[in-house]
Length: 239
Length: 239
DNA sequence: CAGTATAAATGAGTCCAGCTCATATTTCTT
DNA sequence: AAGAAATATGAGCTGGACTCATTTATACTG
Image 1 (cartoon, each protein chain N blue to C red):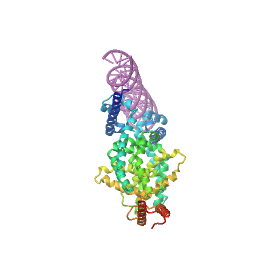
Image 2: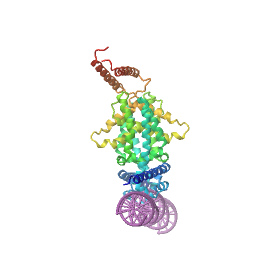
Image 3: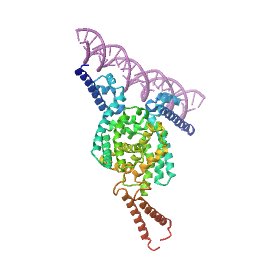
Image 4: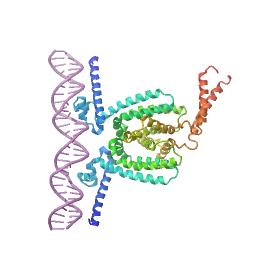
């Protein structure tokens, strides 16, 4: 293998692969999994249909590549953001916001993952399980850190926390896209993030620091008290 | 229209429809959405393939019917169980356990929903949105009740709580099916339920009852108050 | 009850999209 | 330059959802 030409060859292949993935990305983005046509992806990439199958075993593998790209970016930026923060609260808050923003922005790509994600057998030996592990490792690190600092509850296997965290986020994103988005009373994503965070933190064992927890109750009690007083006032004589 | 025969006709149609849905249920259960064959469903139902399309527009509509049946049972049993319990904690705990058990048992059917569930546009005008609303209304009632009793935080739009609740559960079910199930250290579903509940309750504003700092006092005060109110309510005599 | 209109059922055939494979083209080696 | 190996091609195969012209069952009428 002469060094110069061999490298060029390899480079060409990798470039072609990149072109295909980009074409697939566009097509999936536009039409979703079922709507996307292999023929059209080939055309977009400037290749014959058969050529796609030299690079990817089938349509699913192609999705895998597209999704992998998304996860790579997601994981990297999330990791960076977490590193820049110190406190557990800040880190979790950031991760909520980051996840929310990223997933909403690239929803069409995520739609590709979900079905596989839920077909257990298929999922188990897909690439996705790996992407996911890498990504959620960021969350795990935050948690382990928080537990060792005594800021988070440590009495629960970490996977429960993971499920609460990502499960809540995914559902919230769905709700946002199904309802929120269209109407006028739309909250900003950041507002949503902070409200979600305010549920997640106590779930993980951080008692809502200053007033948030105690005040509503106090307020409630006060209200009840006032009601009682009022009622008593209206019947002042007895007792 | 002669009453006798017309009724018989309608009945026949409805019965056939039932037969088809049952056949579809079995086929989907066995092979999943993609693996299920319309031809085979027809055969199972003892009909010609074309006949299916007189009853259901397409494969998706058939899935809708199957899933609808599942939701009907789910909603009914959940509603019943909730009615039998008084305290917010008990109710939520029950709902967690019930949802977990039901969904794990009929996972194959749920797999049919999820992909639609996440294709926003498609979901918006599917039947599923209705099933879901009816089902989650049970949760909503528990929450509203709990808030008005002052046991849950009322500062958050309810849909956030819904997303946390069902999002966490769905993710947990997935995790259970992907990992838990097979290995030896499998926890019982009930154990899992209680651990999940221990995260969800604080998220919704119920401070983990026994040991946490200021709560005993608040609780004590609240109890006294309730007692007073109750006494007032029950003794209309004084005035 | 015969005759006719309408509803329901049938399954051979269409359509379409993912994938294959025999053939053609390019690239590398000597 | 020639042969070998690697790539690329697209016509055609396949399998499955769905359609539609035709047949069969059911209801209605005089």
